[in-house]
Image 1 (cartoon, rainbow, N blue to C red):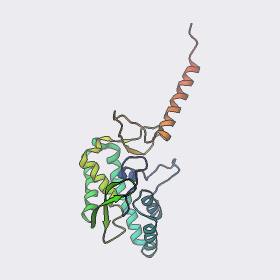
Image 2: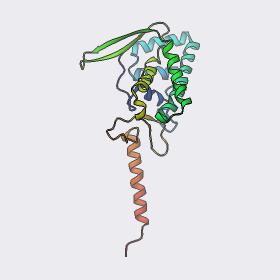
Image 3: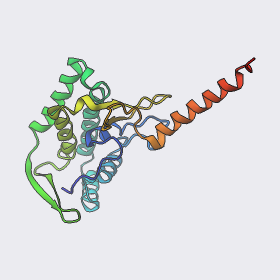
Image 4: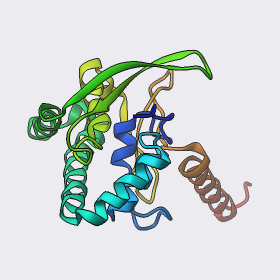
Length: 212
């Protein structure tokens, strides 16, 4: 399995996976709307290469029921992880335990070999998981392991939901020194919120009567 690329914007793979259910107002739509969309997202995340994606697409044509079941499982896991990501350490015990049960369910049936990989481009080392058995079932394992790492390392306290208005559904890992980051992405939601505040301040200024 190839090395996962740097996450898109959320800062961690599992959070980017949660963000695949983009709201309708976002151009990307839901990446898990179809099995092909799911494979495309996995390739974009660096979890599949083009050759393996093509092989899985061919297998999906031969085994459509298995592909559909795999897609439904991915959606089920995302549904369990989203409330955990949105509420973080403030999540209820029911939400937290529900996510942990899903994580353990997937990890409990995962089979494969874990290895250390080396990237000659930058001299870095990374962990990889080489699945054995059902290739479809193994697709979501890196995502679930990413969520498990967040729980074990205490990163959940730094997970936020975007504070933009109108509401943005994206979640992200706050890596700022102050721990007060509010927007999923300054280039999109952050800039829109700043522009909205500027327009509101301009309207107030125009309505204010002259002094004296």
